[in-house]
Image (cartoon, rainbow, N blue to C red):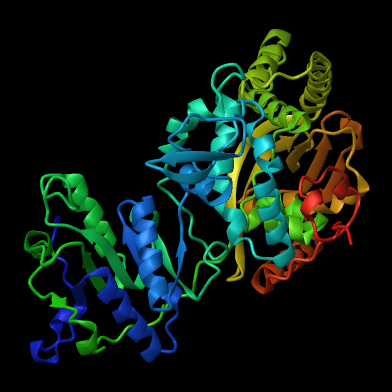
Length: 538
């Protein structure tokens, strides 16, 4: 190990046997924490974490089976695409893939049925994923129940599908052929925010990598073997020692070293001599005091781009924010991304007056703003070019100096929540005023979206003003296709008060988790409309 693990509880008298570190098999460890939960009614199951270097299928099944046997619930935080597929539309079978969704395989006279993922082609995988009956049913259940835990499970698969759409030409690979690469995809950083951890009745299960920066009153560290090349941690591998150390130090009060074999002395010795084995269940006593979290949970973090969804429909906002719903690709979305990138290049070049340089900024934005395999109709490209030339003429006439481009911010709303976002540009005008500019790729700002866009850009203005101390005088929401219809908002005292009031409402809804659907013009283009309870037949 990197250094000795010493707890403040080691300072107590040895006669007290108030040991902070225990060793046990998984069954005994779970039985022990179950007794702790029963004896300490202030302790929630979510205060306990099971950490493992890998969360493979076997490990997850073992944890779920043994936890269920004694009445404990677990919540697995994983971002593996293969596990997301297994829980929803099926798993790859060992037999050749076929067009049908169910494949019957006979082995040694025993017939088994396998759900087979369809042979989708890159370019339309995400769209087809959301059209799959199993996925549509899952989304519908989540929206009706206002419970987005199931919806979150498909995020890794949707992310893998979207990556396949973005990076491969449609003729390159089928979903089947790309599967081996997707199967190995493992996101090492799983964000465990209050929006994700919403089940206080469940023990949290995650990889050690995902637990970095987190602490729990009690931690079960899986699965410690004898310390050889094929077990964890391997003493010959410095990375294994570092990972084990990270996992052990996630525990605030109690650490239970879960071993897979009887008395793995070589491995356990690395954790010191003051280890207390948990005896067979009939002899277990709970002497260790486990305290509940003494610090407040981190406020929920909301993406600024989701604030406009909040103004449209609370249920749609929840699906994107809590459910981590991933929208499918569309031409308007691509136009917006590419236009923003072209304007970013133009501002970074210092608002060049030379037409050749300005055109080069547009060409680079067109290429880098979205995946190059996603082709836009030539008519759309021509309209983008005309709009780009019109808006840079407007910028060059009014702007004096660019203060910030694509500036990221985080705005903290007291203890209620945080807003994360990026503002498009902050420009000092020729009249001496400082203006925050937000580009919208449209001909005008529709009346039903004005309030939504205003909340989004207002949060950015407050965040930037505090973070960078820019004296912002006003905000501009600019329709790129017709800058003459720009909406201008003064940033003054009433503006700040009104923005704070609206953000308080956002976080109040988040806290109460009462997400009601709201019908309106936004429903026409809403991807969730077929599953929305507000539009459900009957």
